[in-house]
Length: 113
Image: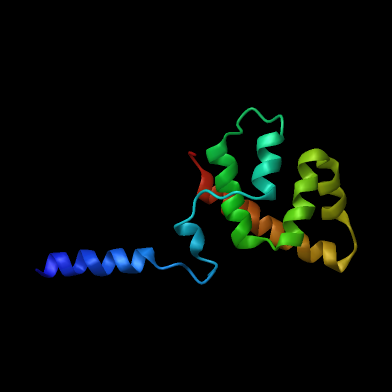
């Protein structure tokens, strides 16, 4: 009886939607969005729906919608990333810190996908 109760409680808790916490990436390893779309549309050989969805899931944790829109541009124009990284603007510096955290998370989450 205890085992059944435990399974029921686990199912109920697992079925509850998240509140959007920054740790949701542990559950959601595939998502759709602008980063995923840009990834799939790119000419990179390693792209796949699974990998691009995983990268999007990492972006959803680390980047705002505006940050994601800026990052999408890097797929079309990789030199733009270098310009942002070297910019003296405080907003670009802050974005680059968030973007670096996103890259680190994506590398950890998506390794082996």
